[in-house]
Length: 459
Image 1: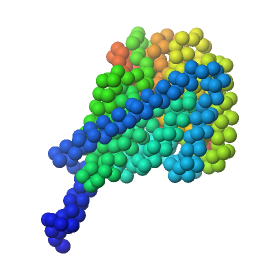
Image 2: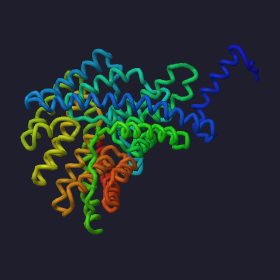
Image 3: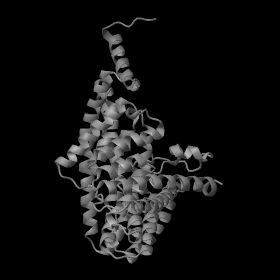
Image 4: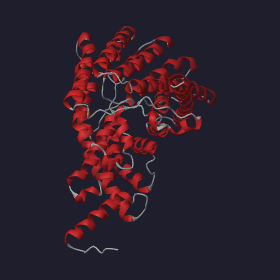
């Protein structure tokens, strides 16, 4: 075997090889790898948390301005934002920043395959890069992050019914993985910094470190990323930083419902978990399938914008008529606020849920750039509130169970949903009711996804 000298160009080559080997040996549990994972997670977490918090704050400020305008301006703003996003991604970036989804792939025929969320069922556009590069975050296309950030700001900041959590993970991973471009010494941290950055972005956004940790690890498993000590340490370090930034700055970027009132008795808790979980899981799963089909539609950007825009207009006008214009705008906080203070019937709430799901699908079809996690939270929240009077439980408990169930059934992130309900607060019995709702929602979501893809979409 050829001997490489310790110094000179050969030494530099050996050094580079060793640095690249660190990324390649993530399966080992050596002290050196663990240290690099923690350091990378911390560095990536700091960069990502700072960027994501500043960016999300700007989105919230702009969205607040939109909501303060006259109704006609409020309803017009989302179309302007989506149009800007389409122009940025298709003309300025010449389509290179778009993430293509192949809707033609045949889904798995075996029901057991759906227990692991197949790769061709990724629902969120922004999530696909995070999934595709899970386990090799140093290869993440971070150079597209600026143009995508501009498209996200235009879409979500102008009131389209899309969310900020997938952008937080996407931009967080991009901020961390970009370290690899700073030189040879930083390349060994790029992967752990990318994982930590994604976890930090989500934790900073939601104020729950366990959610940031679970989100990155659970999402990574869709691409069979290793669930080893190094990856866990990187994600945990980043999530800790993101949570620290949220607490230190007293941020309130996403409002999560705390189930402060327990269900009362075991039978009522089980009924709440079963009915709210099943309803939110089914609605979330159907919404996810519809969004995936809309994302994979191969029409021209002009046709997509016209078709999606027309459907979005119908949905926004219908929601404004049933509820308020503010309930139609944004990721879903306005709809939740309306539901909390209204005495709407079950059928009115359910109609708003369906219209919100259609509106998010239409925004995706039109070319909007954003996340689906928060819109699904709102869909599940309203679904739970619709059932609360029938079940005889508090609206907050039913809403929390529904929100978690929609994430489990629609986004297929049951562990992330469980992490959310266990750490958001409330009595233990209420939290356990929400955990049980996640189990029912996951089962319902898997069944509906399989039936839709197997017997309706790909017969």
